[in-house]
Structure formats: C-alpha cells, structure tokens
Amino acid sequence: MLQDDINRRDFFRLEDRVHLIKHPIEKHLISEDPYNEKFGIPKEALLFSQLRALESDAQSLMPLIIDTNNAVATYLKTIDQKIDCITRYLVSDSKGENIAQKENVSLSEGGISFIHHTPLDLDSYIHLTMVLFPSYSSISTIGQVKGCATLDSLPTIYRVGVEFTVLLENDRKQLSRHIRRKQSLELREHPPKSNENR
Image (cartoon, rainbow, N blue to C red; front, side):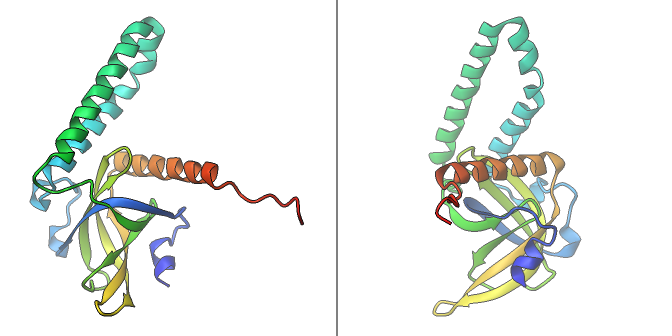
C-alpha cells in the first residue's frame, strides 16, 4: 500500500543514496517557493542550487559558442569544472551541515520514501532538501506524507512515503535527468539476463 501511494502515477522508482534534510511543517507554512529562507536551507545546498541554475540558464549558449569558437568553448568548460571542484571542496570542508552524508531512499519524479526514527502523521506536510550524487545537485521540495509503516523495533524505525506537492519545474527536470542517468548506469552495470538458455 505504501509503495502504491508513493508511486501512484507509475513513475520509475530508483533505489538511491542521497543527502536528505527533513523538516515537518504546518499546512499554513506551505509556499510555492520551496527555497524560501523561512525553511532554513543550509547555505551549502543553496550554493549548489544557485550554481546549477546558472549552468542551466547558460546551457543553451554553449552550442552557439562551439559553432563560432571551439577554443573559447573548451576554455569555458574548463572554468566550469574548476568552479565545480572548488564548490565541492568548500562543501566538504564546511563546519555546518555535512551534505556529503548519505542515506538510502526510494526516489521517483513523484515522491520519495525514507527511513525515519519518529512516526509522521498521514497527510501532514514536510519540507525536504535533497542533495543528489555524484553531481551534488540540490533540490528543495514540499511533500505530503502518504504512508508511515513500522519497519522494526528496538529501536523503532519507520518507512515514510512522501508525495511531492511543491516542486519547481527546473527541479523536476533535474530530478528526471538524475533518475534516467542512474537507471542507464544500473542497466550498464547489471544488464538483463539473456534468454538464450531457455
């Protein structure tokens, strides 16, 4: 039932490891902007989000630059890689939220499920910030709890299923690309078994 709730629109579900920041919120705090400062998103995650947004805005210009001056295009790509390396170092060296710390999740374009040490009420709301690897892309979203099942006791842990209710279109596209890349990688590493022996 839980998995049906999380994936009600038949999105491809990916077993993944992400950094996940969770903050239950009251319904009146729901905003169309999941990056609003009231949600207390770590500056490291915001930095990556802003850099990825700039990269996305400039992406359409790169083919034009390649057509006119390939040397300039190569140089710009090198600069982009340097900035990416510096940013990752700053994040890994941060004394605040350690966004390199990962946990197991089940992720789709429509929602996410994760392990939680306290139960969450059905239909309650939660603000989530995800850092995806290896790109370190950061996505903030607001979701509604659609399932909360006890997995184990001593200590008691729960599997919580959340459906995304506020997810910016650029973030949805970024999440979709991440899932497709991970899916392709998984198929390359574990190709389907041949039916030759049947």
